[in-house]
Image 1 (spheres, rainbow, N blue to C red):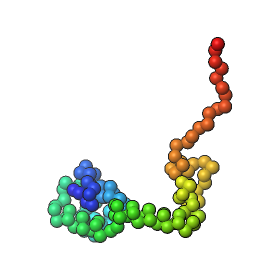
Image 2: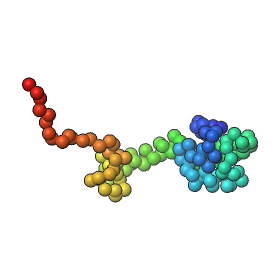
Image 3: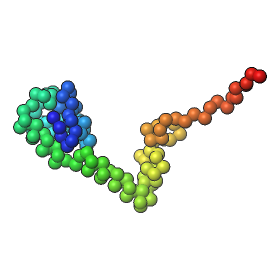
Image 4: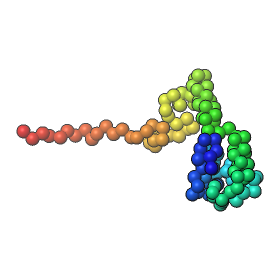
Amino acid sequence: MRIAGITIPDNKHLEFGLTTVHGIGRTRAKEILAELNISEFTKPTDITTDQENAIREKIESFTIEGELKRQVSSHIKRLKDIKSYRGSRHAKRLPSRGQRTKTNARTLKGVKKTMGSGKRKLEKT
């Protein structure tokens, strides 16, 4: 089963399989399946083509994948252009929602760079 160019895994329940599409989380996946009267526990191999087409139409009515990614990046670019505080935090690759940065913040800052212990190794001569 493919939706918006993304292959939905056959071995997962639809509730979790639909979350592979960028812009669809578990809550939205549950809502879509409840609206179409499809069990959350069915697998993509067990649904009919009519149900598959109904799911595809419903998902494609939302902003998903490339369009959503472009929208988010344009919002961040706008914040940087108007030189807002949040935009400056994005530009510096730091957390923009008030988290501490003395420790943690590893998601944005990347892998910790250690500077060494300061002790020199003595060479034998």
